[in-house]
Structures are given as C-alpha cells and as structure tokens.
Amino acid sequence: MSVTTAVSIAAPQAAVRRSALRRLTITEFKLFLRERVGPVWVIAFPLVLLVIFGAIPAFSKASAELGGYTPLDVYVPILIAFSLALSAVVAMPMVLAGYRERGVLRRMRTTPAGPYRVLAAHLIINAAVAAVSATEVLVVARLGYGVFLPRQLAGFALGMLFTVAALQALGLLVAAIAPSGRAAQIIGMLIFYPMLFFSGMWWPIPEMPPVLQHVAEATPLGAAWQAMSNAGMGHWPPALPLLTLAGYAVVLSLAAARLFRWE
Amino acid sequence: MGAVIEVQHLHKNYAETVAVDDVCFAVEEGEIFGILGPNGAGKTTTVECIEGLRTPDRGEISVLGLDPLRDRSELTQRLGVQLQDSQLPDKLRVTEALELYSSFYQTPADWRALLDMLGLAGKSKTPFKKLSGGQKQRLSIALALLGSPRVAVLDELTTGLDPQARRDTWELIEGVRARGVTIVLVTHFMEEAERLCDRVALIDSGRIVALDTPAALAERVETEQRIQFRPSVPMDDRLLTSLPDVTSIIRRGDVVVVTGNSNALNAVTSVLARHQIQAQQLRVEQANLEDAFLALTGRHSRAAQNASQN
Image (cartoon, rainbow over all chains, first blue to last red; front, side, top):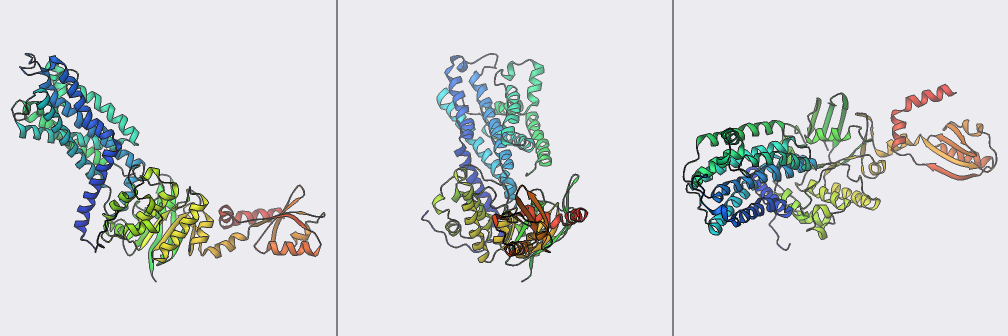
C-alpha cells in the first residue's frame, strides 16, 4: 500500500452515500468471489450442465413433441432459470442471514451507511451475476451447440428482468425468515428443488399433462421459462407469465420487508 | 465542559422482564465513563438505547444534543460504536474493512494512521477469520474511530482476551481519550473500570446502584474486606470482635476469617502484635466485583442478618 490519498475534506452527504454503496458493492463482490460457492454454483454449474446436455446426441435433434425445436433449445432457458434461482434463493440468503447471525447487519445499523445498503449491494451483485450467467449460457450454447440466440432479444431480457425481480424477492423472504446462514441454505434448497421441477428441468413443461402445466405456469420458474422460451422463439413474452412474476416480486418483497429483522 | 450524553429516566422492558429501570446519568466531555455490572444487568440495553439500536419504553436520551432515534444520520456520523459480539465477514481483510467503513463517513480519519496506532500494520492483508481475539478487538476499535467521532461507546471490549492483550487494549483506550474522544465503556471487570474510568455507574437488575469515581466506589467495597490467618497461639475471638472495624469472625478449623471494613487489617494486625500473636499464612482477600455488589446492593439484608445473630 504505497498509494496515499489526499486528506479528505468533509464530503457532501449525498456523495458519501453514493460512494458508500459503491464501496460496499465492490467489497461484497470480492467476498462473493472469495467464497467460491457462489461462482461455482452460478457461473460454473449451468455451464457444466450445458456441456453434459450438449454431449447427448438426442438433445440436438429437432423433436416433433417440442414443436420442431431441439431439447437443447428448450433447456437453455431452463439452465438460465436454474442459475438465477440458485443464486437468488440459496446463495444470497445464505450470506444475508449469516450476516444477521454474526452481527454484521447490526454493526451496519450504527454507521451512516445503514444496513439497507448491504441488501442493495447484494441485489446489485445478484443482478449482475445473473446477467453474466445468462450471457455465458447463451453464448456457449450458440457457439458450441448451435442453439440460436433468442430471436426476440429485448423480450428475452424483459423476461429475465421480471424473473430476477421475483427470485430476489423470494431470496429476501428466505433471508428474512432464516435464523442463520445454514438455515437459509436449507430453506432455500427446500424451495429451490420443487421450483426447479416446475421449470421443466426433469420433465419439460410442454410434455407435462395439462393440469401440471397450469401448476407449473403459476410457479416462478415455470413462468420464467414460459417468458424466456417464448422470447427465444421470437415472440414477446405473453402477459400472463410476466404478471405472475411481477405478482411474486411485489407480494414476496412486501412480506420480506415486513418480516426482515436486522438482528 | 458540558454533558455529551444525557440519559434521563430510561426504562426498557423485554416482554415480562425489566431490563432497564429508571436509569439516569450524564457523561461529561472528555471523560471515560464506565458502566459496570454483572451479565444481564442491563448495561448493553442501556448503551443500545444510546446508540439508537433500541427504542426506550420511556425516558429521554440526548447524545451531543441529538436524539438517537430521530437524528440517526447525524448521530451515526459522530458516535463511534464497538458492539459486543459483532463480527465481520470471515474473508474480509483488515484494509478492506477499514476502506469500506471509511467510505461511510463525511470526515473519515486516516485509516493508515489508525492501523499503526492499533498495531495492526503488519496484518493489513489478513482476513478477519485469521486474526487473534485481541487483533479482532483492535480492528473493531479502529472501525469505531474511523468516523473521527467525538464520543465512542465500547461494549465488553476486553472480554475473552488474555491478560496481556487486555492490558494492551487498556493502553490503547487511554491513548484514544488523550485524543479528546469521550468514551463510554461497558464492562464487567472491576479492574478494568478502576484502571480506565474517571467515573463508574454500577448497574444491577436494570438500576444504577452507585455512581462515583472508582476510588470512592472501591472505598465502599473495601468495607467488606476479608482477612484470613492461622494464629500462632490459641486466641480468644473477643480480642477481635471488640474492634469497631471488624464485623464478624468465623473459624474454619484453626484458620480465623475476619470480615471488616478497610481499616480492619490495620486494627487486626496491631491487636495481634500487642498480644504477640503471629498471623501465619495471612491472606487478605481483594474485593472483587461480586463483593462490590454484595456491599452495594445487599447491605441491608446483611446488616439485618448480623443484627439477628447478635
């Protein structure tokens, strides 16, 4: 540390607040990378799954049951939803509930930055990592396995935005009710797996019986898949899945705001 | 020299239990003010109300003329806080923590100077998890001082530290006061309060039972001095019970245990000398916090006991 900064003169409050959020986001991002769990789950895991699915010859053959699309076409949005959910519903609440458990949030309450900025920093990091994760899956699928990029790119981005909002709200609720980081991981996983089922991870939604399809579309990842796969095929995401996701975002964040405790 | 913290008629209950019961005190500028008491006495609740972390049920608190709840953004700029049991993320490095907390304040102190002052310069790249207990505490003091606060509240600063680390920390606190920072120190160590504090509030069951300088408090505590010895020749208890400074005598085998006030030792040894009795294996029990509490809270019940025995 040979760099020296000039002695700072009293900075205006608004500037201090902005720089506090920026510094918090940078610091929390470094910690996110250092913890390794986050990057492995969110960045590496979906890629590994993509490579495995891509290696199965049947996955690259157009299927009449899937409306002429290949299973891999169907799986790309699922893999993205998978990574967004794991990151927002398991990884993020683990850190936040752990911070509450260890008194990090309580300590932040005694500083001018306050604990809200810690949450804000994590939501920013989560959204940024979601964008990176989705981009890498799309690019590798395109270059490695000939899956076309979403034909309605703006619609795809819109679907992702709504998905991230709904999943972040769910993640905040998990962080709100979990008494410890470990508990948050368990609760997050208990929500994550059923949710993943309805994204079509093991049984693509178009192949499900109609009743199950309706149930799937009412879940966050089912709606996310619907919105993103429609955009992938060149349509704007239909209103229903977007409204479903928006509903989750609003209701779950209100519940989280009501239940969240700093200590 | 005005009061920087004023607490008036503070009350705080948790469900059915009374945590703080009508606590009043004022902390003067530039002093080290101790809040001393056993675990669960209400010390932490009291300072958490001062820090604005808890909402009092009743009472008035003013810190530097600010209301801890209404004037949060002003107060957090000027009040340094070290919390009991608050940790940092395991992998956060020392300099990262200092840079991070610096960004919160309008007039941050130079954290490199703080790092030197706290003897953490060699640990700048060490993650929080790898720091020793004493180093963690010093880092947490550094964070409390980063905003160049005029007042710092330090809660259970040396709990869990080894004696050397504890003494080092005390020196540090004296250094901080020398820089003009008013300090509120929460502790359950009598010795710590005696060494550091200008004035001490003794809290028990949510109430202030005494508020004075450590010397004045120690005087009251010393009234409960215990003197143990083995007389070299058989001795009549009445030699000592007749002394005004002695309150009681107990025999444990051939050991005599005398309880009395701070003059008792003088009185006992001179009587023994006059009767040419040697006090073998003489031991004077230093008053500890427990004795202080017995002395300051249990005086009435003990006096009543003595009265009924006579």
